[in-house]
Length: 161
Image (cartoon, rainbow, N blue to C red; front, side, top):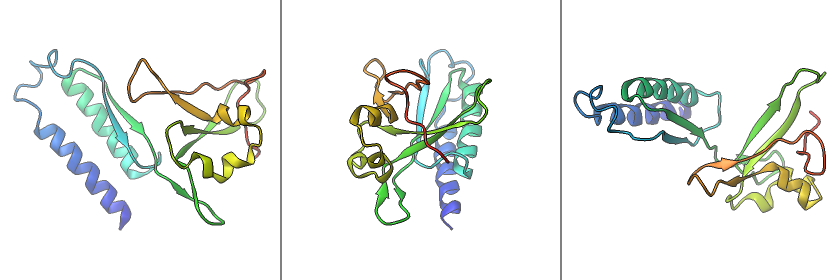
């Protein structure tokens, strides 16, 4: 039932966007929007909402001649023992020369659940924990920056799975 509600929400938002577009949108593509449009998708990647929103984003990009970005920003995740994990994205790194992929996470700087996140608390050293947190980009409101470092003092924390 929850999946149906998620899909219905996405359909409503997409229909509202398409319906609110000005008549003759092809002729006004240079006027609106004048820069990329970002949508925050509050569900984890890979689900129906993610897939559908990407399809709608591609269609809107074609129609308006401007990029529509679907920004996946999941909510809190239940923890097995109790409590909640802070919103995060699991990241797999594949590269030539690596025998196995690397597994890490990215958290968001401004989230109030960071201090209580059970996985972040497993990383005892504060500078190492910081490698898992995306920082807000001052130059782009609503954007975050997170670098993966494979070696050196600021090496990103990777997990054994």
